Amino acid sequence: MVPTPCCTILESISDGVFTIDIQKRITSFNRAAEHITGFTQQEAIGQHCFDVFRADICEHNCALGHTLSTKTPQINLSAQIITKQGEQKPISLSTNILRNPGGEIIGGVETFRDLSELEKLRRELNKQYVKEDIVGKHPKMQAILSFLPDIAESGSPVLLQGPTGTGKELVARAIHNLSPRASGPFVAVNCAALPESLLESELFGHAKGAFTGAVRDKPGYFLAADQGTLFLDEIGTTSFALQSDLLRVLENHSFTPVGGTKPVKSDFRIIAAANFELKQLVAKGDFREDLYYRLNVVTLELPPLKERREDIPILVDQFISQLNLQQGKNIQGISPEALHALMCYPFPGNIRELRNFIEFAFIACKGSRIELEHLPNEIAQGSHSQQPKLSAQDLEEAKRIQAMLEHCRHNREQAARALGISRSTLWRRMKRLGLLG
Amino acid sequence: MLLHSWHWVCFAIDSHQNIVSMYTQKLCIAGAVGRSLKILFIWGAVMILSVPLFGSRISPHFGSSVTVAVYEIQDREIVSKRIEHFGESCGDQAVHLARQIVAFRADILVCGGIQRQCKELLVSKGIKVLENCKGDADQQVASLIESGSLFER
Image (cartoon, rainbow over all chains, first blue to last red; front, side, top):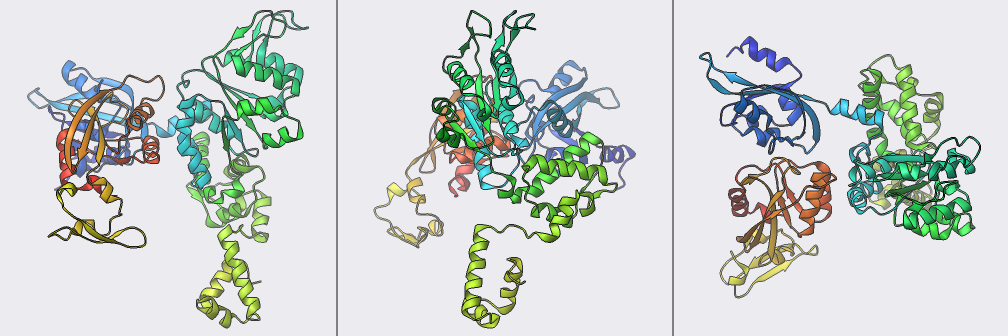
């Protein structure tokens, strides 16, 4: 059967469109609707619209129901749907009634647009990260991700430890956004960025006339974080004197602004971060033990990127999609050679450094795929000289093969037989483990 | 097939504690072969199954519902059903609902659409999640019991 022009138009647009009858059963479902919801046309047609569309407004504020009962269209409503695959997507939707040629109402139509990419960009710009922004298949990352909602709900102090660029602030923001304090402020302070004297007045605020230039009362970060979360980055760099002030505030959530006389109360949650293990600083006497134990209620160790190389491809994809949105480009992916080069690089600057490399490649790349030559020289050159780091299991196997080769006086035939594998398998394994040269 | 109605059960297991063969007085219980030994503890035990509701139907959007049907199932039969009402949360309503389901020790959640993070949270607490279900809650639970899919590992 030849499709009508109307059907062809509906199938070719990028907005999802479906129609329902008076009983709210789906009568048509276009290709974009399939793409956005994850349900096929066959699965959707004949079903109740709420069982397929699955929006947060379906149960209490159904847009189509409202349109059918009031006979008025709804324009650009916001909602969140859950796709068949369990992905929550923000959408905007509009509804209208459908009439037959006689003017009788026969159902309704809903058009909807996927705003996921725009929402990601908005979150990126406003730094309102959610758990889904933290990606990683590495077991340590998986453990952190599964634990995150519990941590967020608890309200306990959190200590984030990990080298620079491992995403401590991103995790802190995700905890805040998952917590009951999500509607409150998230205040981030880098303790290393401010000189000692200034940090004190910035944290606690100051009264008018407290020091030269204090021309008015100024609330500090502790008060700014009232009903929200205060993120203290690089807390290990603070002085002993400030640490004792911090301890006092954490104990009773009350403090006196610099130059002030009256104590001020603030209801905040503290998330602290350090680039190195605070315990070591405690052992050296550079960090107060009591403050450490006050902060160390929940500790999350974020692994450096070199320990979670399997996450590099996922992170690269994430950065490419973010930068495409930010810069209006349409880069489709990365070549295997370029990805291999990234996998070989040690990443002392961790995820932040990886993102910088991809951002650099976006400047250099004029085509649709990031190639090796689009990456900074240090990566392109390094890829020829470095082998990928071997896992503990690979190292164990390499040792076993090497020992057997030595035992067999480097006769590969004998070594393969002794290892219970063929000569070609031994050669392949030696090549993979870097034992050939 | 009720375990407590049998006078004796004889079974053999392999090194992974999976059942290799199982017999009662007259029957070879073929359905048990290949299953974990743990299945014996499921038979006869009370299993708690929860279903977020939209009226009497399964709620299509996890987190929208403030009402959950809680079924107690024993020996493949519903022995009790109650309705729990949850208040609104000031945080993420879906995570709040997931926590409530964990709190009353549900073994299984039957739901429509569920956010991945909530599913992960529930699975990490040992709760089996049967998602993308739809229709009347009572009928769906009965049909899941009938099909035996609730009891699969």
